[in-house]
Image (cartoon, rainbow, N blue to C red; front, side):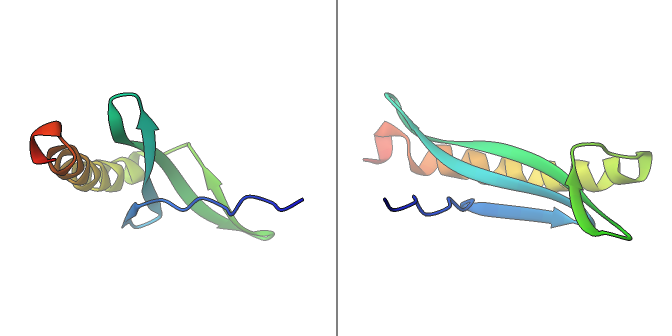
Length: 84
């Protein structure tokens, strides 16, 4: 048996330790993007990801969210039925 290759996001946005990854999915209405959001931190055991954000992280999250939203809108515009 062969394992399926690991999916990769179609776009990633980073601001400091905050990362937003955009993933392409398919539906009966066509392709669309979903976002996952994570925050990285380092401790004595190495780097980890969490979905918890401090007050300081929220500004970075806001900036990354604006960029991700822009990319999602571009994707939706480029993949609308009117463009096919």
